Amino acid sequence: MDTSSDSLFNQAMARYQAGASASDVLPDFLRITETAPGQSAGWICLSWLQLLCDQPEDALRSARTAVKFSTYDPQARINLSLALLETRSKGVRDHIQVVQRVITFAPESTGDLKSSIEDGLQRKPGWKALEKVKAWLNL
Image 1 (cartoon, helix red, strand yellow):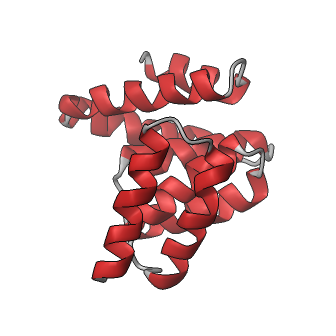
Image 2 (cartoon, one colour):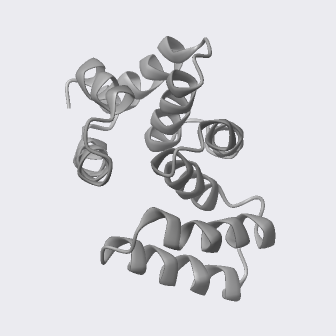
Image 3 (cartoon, rainbow, N blue to C red):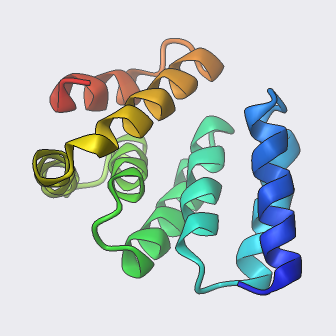
């Protein structure tokens, strides 16, 4: 990722973490993935925002790209699982199992995953797919 993409990523993340709505920062992450298409963090964030903005088909494409670039990133796999659930597609179990293995071998990742899930449930109350994933992962 070049300096301008890195700067835009950090600014967009800071805005999101400060409480900006998903729809407000979504265009920034679209731009990030256009200017740095090989950067997995941009795709992971984009897919999450698309899920929050009820764009499951777009989220599915973005999450698949994120997993392609970052095969064992648990957040990428969670986002892909959510997109698969939201689009009623097959293959959810395989991705949940990868996340479970990552948690087993890298238990320090559970804190970030729990925070992400809580953020999602706060921003999108009653999100059934995320509640299922949370239960399956025991987070």
